[in-house]
Image (cartoon, rainbow, N blue to C red; front, side, top):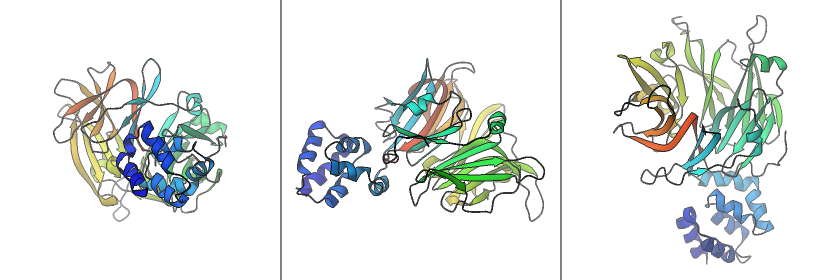
Length: 403
């Protein structure tokens, strides 16, 4: 009996049919210890697990438990691309980021929780981590943590002051899931530019306690920097690209330029990632991504009057050791403009935004860096953004209440 169930679980869980699900429900009777059932269903993706919760109270209790949710994350590697864009209305679609032969099949509309729908139209999506996305609304004065796999979201009051909302540039957020505890965290940074005022004021929110508190580490950055507004979280560390003092402390050379500030979600300590001189001193805009869970910096500039994007990746997690992987041409063979780089697929292909001319509608496409092949993904509109996420049950054990 165990061999039969294991065969379905390991070999066919990606394509469960209603009949197969019924067989599993029947076979998984009280004759099999709950511990053994846990090992079996732990391998299943999120969608059938949500349905299995309705079979009996014991099954629901098991799947809803914090231990099961944490262990389930380790077994899952099915990634999706969440694409947000403006057509006649704001739309979200999910594209399974599977093997290259079938990509981008099975694109599906995403059911958006009412909390996300109700957020002010000028919300900012901060980043994705362990299958969760975090959205931030200045005027709503709250953040929303959203799991698109289980269609659930929770909101977090940010306790912003009136001047925070009016100035907008005084508050910066970071988001990520702590690797050890699987606990989602939000870090709130207030930077004061006034003389005699402590420059950095930092608070941390953990979803398990639903409480804002001071960071564990009291070693806060002391200098004034200007945040670029975006973040990336890689392997339990949040990174922000900022503009600040990049002088070499040994010889005093340099001045103000680009650097990266880091925040470890476990130790809650800040750090600094020095960029190569070329990237630190470039007048061109930089943006960050995380191809294959590595920190990458995209340098967009004009070379010989042509737009190009250089992709730099931090080698082996060593600060300042960045390697240029490849360059994306800003002009395609058919004459379209690559107006921006939006992210990367699991396979390493870049996700780019194409335009026939500067004022035309935008189209999402993949760019294969070595063959330079471009593949239209069938999504067109305005304000396109892409976030990669992994299926997870995180938030399933959270009450449907407002913090």
